[in-house]
Amino acid sequence: MRQFIQCIAEQNHHQTTHLLKMLREIQSRYHYIPGDAIEQLSGLLNIPRTQIISVVEFYSFFHLSPRGQYELLISDSITDHMLGKKDLFDYLAKSLNVTVGEVRKDGLVSLDNASCTGMCDQGPAGLVNGYALTRLDRSVCDQIAALINQQKPLEEWPSELFQVADNIYQPGLLLNQQLEQGDALKAVFRRGTKETLAELDKSGLRGRGGAGFKTATKWKFCSEEPQPERYVVCNADEGEPGTFKDRVLLNSYADQIFEGMTVCAAIIGAKQGFLYLRGEYLHLHDKLQAILQHRRQNGLLGNNILDTNLNFDIEICLGAGAYICGEESALIESLEGKAGIPRNRPPYPVTQGYLGKPTVVNNVETFLAATGIAVNGGEWFASIGTEKSKGTKILSICGDCARPGIYEYPFGVNVQTILNDCGAVDVLGVQIGGPSGTFITNQELDRKLAFEDLATGGSFIIFNSSRDILDMVQNFTHFFAHESCGFCTPCRVGTSLLRKQLDKIVGGHGSAGDIVELEATCQLIKNHSHCGLGQTAANPILSTLERYPEMYHGLTRNISFDPGFDLDGALETARRLANRDDAGAHLAQTESEHE
Image 1 (tube, rainbow, N blue to C red):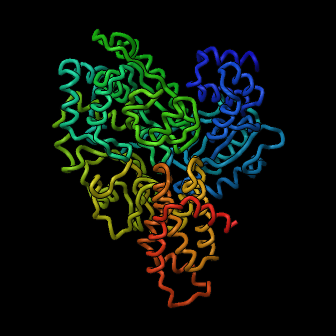
Image 2 (image 1 turned 90 degrees about the vertical axis):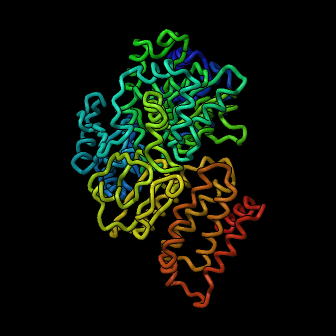
């Protein structure tokens, strides 16, 4: 072990910014992070062992106690539940003779849940030692159990177990563009970097990760910072359940995405870029590394790119299972080898980002769009969409539809058109934007996909009339409670309280007063949380409580309460209480009372 740890520290030049990479290698070899490894790494990197332990404890894919030689994680997303995940999970546990959440006595296998694996279009899905398993059923589970009990190395498992399909059903402006390596860079150097930034501004491109900040403005702010050292970061940590478009873009359009990052580097004057790749997408890592190497060989990365004195390269950094790292400042913390806890803002990354230097962080789809704009000009993009939402949006569509997969639409399309195209019938509602987004009912299907109406990072989860909406709300509420980073009291305590309160109500043990308390807790978390996770964690409850108040009322029918109880008035009182200054203390007291 000592020789192995010494070797990986040397390979990473003893840089603490590479701590996650080193921990991933240790976890892969030993199936946990041994105490002796932490002690040695602490000395080699000259950082406290407690700092390393805090990082290990933060990420779901790191463990301080041994896991099985085959670590199986099955996605617990609502889309997997809709495909029979629960029964399949129980069947797999029985087949392997392993208790969920534990290691089998012989140490060979462990089985547990994962929040989401990014395979919502081909579930039930899971991971084995980090590699994707799709379209699980009982026969596949039997095959997996046999391979594990025979102790077959993963390299000898049938390749069809690891097949991940793109499922692109409707390409549009971006997915149809045929560009050669270097086309965008050549266009930038012919036109000029300032002129290309002007075209980007003319295009009206806004960030495609969900926030929708204008891309040209972000790049301009970063380029104007006085510090000469700047960075480009591609956020490929799409952890929102129901979202998988970035996985597809990286599998089939990686060259254009890397080129978009290089275009950004030319404009802002950066020499180093990072692709922060979601840990669940380990299966893409080697392929992406090969594409980067090919670009270096062709003079499109490295020193003196296309003989223009542009020096720029890209490094891939794998996450380790933390939804919060999709938030840009948490992602930067993770890139620096730390726990991914969101920073206070301001300052923003464009002024103080990676290592305190000006940094552009954009989504995978944003860089893909920037490449097309660099080649075709701003008007090519701006001529499509709406006045406030230019261009197209790539959607991940899953749930109750005939053709789950990837669809690209001009902004302004209505929801009903999308549902028709993917073969959704008897629709009860759609969750747009993942758990942190908005649930709309079948009475709202004329609403439009646009920043001025339904803004989304790209997730569409469809539910037909056979579904119980509260199953979705519970799943999402449990998800947020699990994924809270624990930094601030409103989110750490609040999401846990929401989970308990909702479970109580759904279990038939709630009263009208519990619904009021649920609403009050939602508002407290939304108004007082440190970052976007807490600020949106209550959305599944709030959006369904607004649309289906009778559903929540009905759950209290077995509880004796005054029939004249004014629920609407009580909810309004709860909303006012949510604005109190001592929200954190109030939540902590409420949690104590629950306990």
